[in-house]
Image (cartoon, helix red, strand yellow):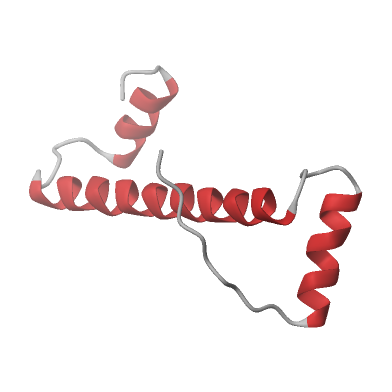
Length: 80
């Protein structure tokens, strides 16, 4: 995978936090920590996109003839 070098500016407090995470052994270096944050953001955005798509699909499917209690029962039974 191609890599791209970036220059990022942090406040002193942010830099101290990154150094602490590395020192504690959570990450091997600053870059690993930043990449982990980017991956976490990508995952969160994908979950949001998936939710929006599910909501759109629900709206497009029209009204259900089921009552809310029926839907809950189907979810509890693993049918939905």
